[in-house]
Image 1 (cartoon, rainbow, N blue to C red):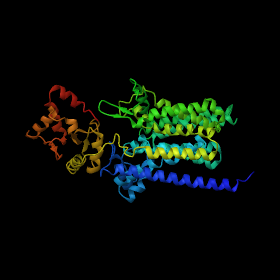
Image 2 (image 1 turned 135 degrees about the horizontal axis):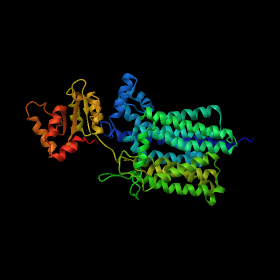
Image 3 (image 1 turned 90 degrees about the vertical axis):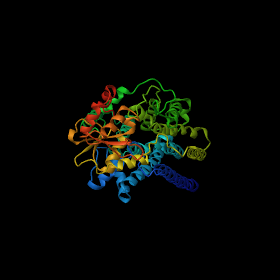
Image 4 (image 1 turned 60 degrees about the vertical axis):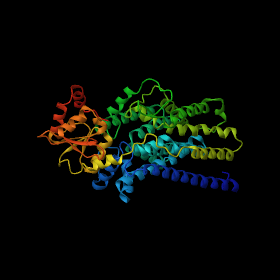
Length: 511
């Protein structure tokens, strides 16, 4: 085997050091940007902002989570919470593990783009994207899950290249970690990794006849096992409720491809679904177009992975996806559009190898493109951020000690519900069904009540009614800004509402 020339070896060392420095700088800048956004408020950020400190507080105090959930994200954040406190630890974890997505994005980008520059482009897009920032401030577990999931996918691609026991073991450990981190992360890994592994094994002639049957049976058994686990642990694995969301996946077309579009809110997420589609089309051209013969060849598994990634980007960009429900599947997949977008960019970057005169030219060009991406992307990625208002926090703090032992807060708004549990230690339910009547304590914000509404007026009247436990208002700005109501008092209030309002509030609509 020819040894590399001293000049080539020196250049390779310089490139490795430069890339490592670039990735370290990218992670550091991304971490600081995310941390700055999260710490603009002294309180947790996002609708489920208080969910994460509650989970970390329980994990540190009892070794278990307060609510059933995929646990890996909390295990990763727990040391940070132990060094600081649960609220700070949650923010540190969200910023750190969100920024670290640069590393697996780079690794996969190198494999699909066949050069380090392609990896840098993928890392730059994934790290600076609006979707990644949104996950850090709103869906922390999902953001950490994607970092873990892309790491697992990188390990799988490495194992397909060189099938040693160590690499195969690492890949399996990565897939298990993705399952423990987040349902969607595990889904992305399997959707890409399984076809890639089958394609690689088939191309080598090792998967045919009886072996192919065994593998297909194993995949079927794994699918059935996953379904059973979803029935037993719906918060941790794909459950029938998750699958039911597919039935609500389609709606009237939204040609701008927003992540969320409601009468009050439109989240474009940097138009990453549209950009991902355009890059997917360009990637498709590089896979099947006339230039493909001049490009560095992808292995069978890598090629299949590239095809699936292109398909994901195009599916996410279907205009008919329903994106009007923030709990719907359409919204959930649109906010992760940056993942296939970044990886498609790496596939497209492979074309630079064919059109530039030398490896060093295309590496330098792509490194420059990555730098431009980092410098050009907005730093203030706060679209869709939900902040806790100091007056509401003060109102919730005012509930401490007012709900008797054994009481359960019935809170229609999830954001406030987690806040109630954090500050009072009282468990909550969003709906009253299943909670004994004598343990129910209704907690209602003014957004639920409505200023000047019949409920607003009846709450005031209930305070003057003898024989009732009077509603307790704790908000500093309005007597009904946040109200605690005993269940017998709530029944009296509902009985004295006009018929339309009575019907509405008997349903106890949740937000």
